[in-house]
Image (tube, rainbow, N blue to C red; front, side, top):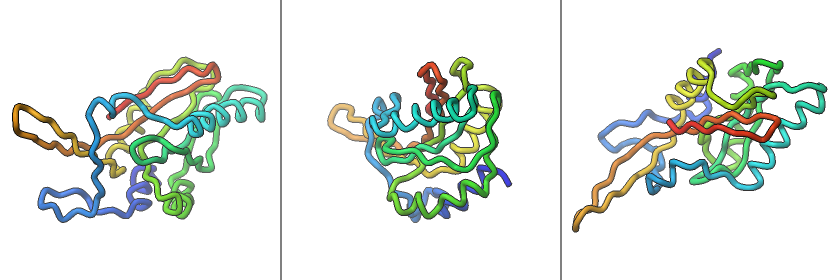
Length: 177
């Protein structure tokens, strides 16, 4: 089962259409606010704990995976059951679906995903780029960007998703799509 298709099931949302009948909630955001990952101290500490705990439990650095939850900022992460190794992490889509109730109860949305690169550098591999594309295509993060020019205001609706890598050295890399 593909992660992307299960996230679509998880959301059970209608695809955006231009007629305005979509049930997607839009948030007004300044474009520059999207360019920097905004993450609560709680969520950031949780990411660091996941990376460190996996290292301590297995006595060597491994990759791990999580989903970012929030509204305008990342407020928490949720961690699906996963198979880890030093160079990859595998998450079966059904394990993401198993988190549906917890995500719904949080009243937060999936804003993207993150994973650790063990003790490697932080970058996006080819696999990471494919995962970012899947997450982007299947999440419903939409924002209204207002632009004021002279006396007129124009609005643009954009879709976005964050992807990130972290490592045990507390380095991080964030990709906005």
